[in-house]
Amino acid sequence: MEFNLDTCKYVVWGFKNAYHTHSHIHEGFYRTLKLTGKTVLWLDQADDISGYDFSNTLFIGEHTAVERGYYWPSNKERIGMMPVRDDCFYVIHGDRAEAKEALGLDKKNWLMWDVFINQRQYETPKKVMLAPDMPFYPEWRRFDMRWATDMVPFEIAAMKPDRVFNRHSRVINWVGTKWHVNQVELGQFKDECERDGVQFRIMGAGQHDESYHDAYGHTKVVTVEDNIQLVRDSYMAPAISGTHHITEGYAPCRIFKNISYGQYGITNSAYVRDLFDVPVIFESDPAALYHHAKQRLAEIPLKQLHDLMDEVAQKHTYLNRLDGMYKAIRMQQEGI
Picture 1: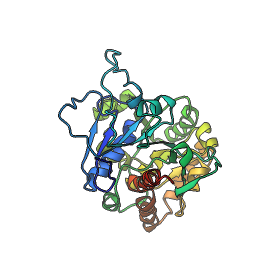
Picture 2 (picture 1 turned 30 degrees about the vertical axis):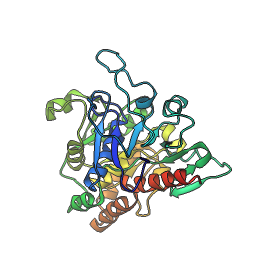
Picture 3 (picture 1 turned 90 degrees about the horizontal axis):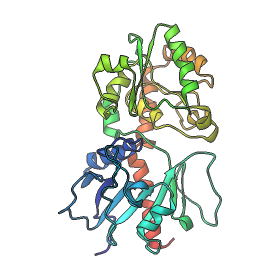
Picture 4 (picture 1 turned 180 degrees about the horizontal axis):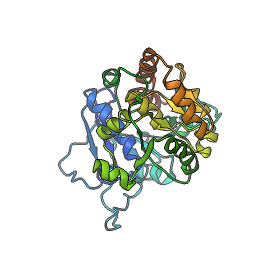
């Protein structure tokens, strides 16, 4: 039996039972496939996969899932790996030699992909644009794409609020990673919030502060449903980038998620600003961004927010990313 993209099943493989930053990407793919009627499972090394029929399956995974398995945090033991079969196709994040070797360098049933950033684009003998910001390099068997919201279009339509500015809230819930790449910029924005009497809570990404835990009682990993509610409850929902990400042109999935959840887009990255036809709120200085956003949110008409949400629904969901992925798979199979 050969792999058939038109009739295949789907498996999203990796980081279901153990937190990893890539868990959010896998959940986005899984939710999208499930909500659009595909036969899909989300599995990882902790699952008992005996008895599963993996024939004619498209696996979407991450490079450590196929190299040799990853270390389970509790005992540092290497455990089960993703099954590698000739009648399946594999699309694996992370262009790593070890992953390619595990999949079989002589095989034609896999592609690698990585996150798209503006400053990492290549001119090769053949470069095909699968979609905007989605280049495919056939000779390398690799394509790049941006992250996306974990919502699908009909969910985004149902999220449309009846206000632009959530002015009655006095808290901003930042759901994501605070680390050396962005801690300076986050701190600058946070300081201005708190000078203005708005609390800035940092949570998720395997971390949280005690104020969040005491107020909400959640663990360190925030579910999609909780993320939606936390963002919608916020005074505003900025997507703050660190200097490194601003310089290289990386767009965090947070900007797409926050908009799709019903908050107006706010960013300190010019690259992120330029992604949208409907203008988002931009100021390069994080401290000034808080005050600029506060002023602009009070002026923006509701229709403009709804139009911005429509733009994300049309261009920045995992449905869009899957469409490009399918094009790359068909080109790989046809030897283009």
